[in-house]
Image (tube, rainbow, N blue to C red; front, side):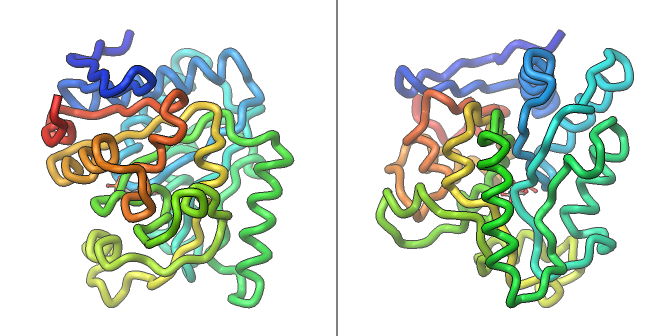
Length: 265
Ligand code: F6R
C-alpha cells in the first residue's frame, strides 16, 4: 500500500497538490495511480517522461509488473522528448533511458513504445514531429501524462518563451532550441556543456494539456522556485508548467517537503 501524503495543499478548489515526506513515497503514489489506470483500461495511452525524477516511479511499475502481474502488453506510450541530434545508442539519449529504466523490464511490445527519433535528418524533423502528434491523436489522445519540471519551469522541452497564453497552450510537437538552464543542468551527464545537444524534439503543450490525467512530479530544493512559480504565479509562457493551471482539474502535483518549501499556504 502506498504512503499517504503528509500534507494536502488546496491552493484553489480544483488543484490537487500532494506533499510527501520523501520522494520515494510520492513516486510510489504516482505509480499506484498509473497502475490503477492500466488495470481499469489495459489499452491506455501513456505520455512518459525521462530524467532523474520518474526513475522511482518506473522502478515501482517494474516491481508491480514482476510481483503483481501488472501488464503493459496493450499499453501504447509516447515519450515527451528526445535530444537532437542524438543516437539511440548514446547512453544520454532518452530512448536509451527508457529502455534501461522501463521498457526492457516490462511486457510492452517495442512497436507500441514511441520515442521521438533523434536521428531523423534535419529536413525531415518537422514532418516527424507532425507525425508524432498525428499518432497521439489517432490513439485518441493521452489518457495520462507523466511530467517532471525543469528548474526553469519547463515541461517536456517546452522552454520558457514569450507568447500569448492561447499560443503557449497550443504548441505542437516540434524541434526546439534548449534553454541555457537546461543545457547547464544536462552538462554533468554529457561531461561538459559543450557536449550537450543544442536542440531537442519535444511533444508540445497541445497534447500535454489535453491529457485526461496529468501527474507532475518535482523533488528537491532546486525545484522549489519553479514549483512555487508554477502553482502560485501567473499562468504564462515564461513558466511553462504554470500553463497546467489552465487544466487544473486534471492535474495532480506530487511533491516532497523540499520542492514544496517555496509554497505559501
Ligand atoms: C524529460 C523532461 C524534462 C524533465 C525535467 C526535469 O523527459 O521532459 O522536462 O522532466 O528537465 O528533469 P529531472 O527529472 O532530471 O530533474
